Image (cartoon, rainbow, N blue to C red; front, side):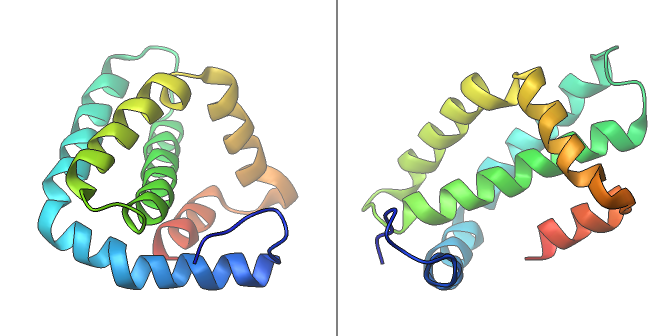
Length: 129
């Protein structure tokens, strides 16, 4: 199902669930090493970063990366004949555009901390979905 601005949030949710079941799970069973390599590299980069002092901040940042990449890969791999090359392209573009964007990261952290909710429980929910 292709989405556009006329779709309702419920239709978008159903389309994402369908893409997750039909594409992402098949893709990740074959190519999990690609996302795993990206996340391991992310961990090593963040260990060297003095700007993120707290472990929970580093964990939040990596989890946000994982959730966003999973969302993008789920959508894009459902519309391609070459999911491996598409996912590599997505990870490269994400890294260049969003992963190194401090403002983006702080905005996501702010959203997770609204309503005094536990950041760890919010992250767990995002990963589980």
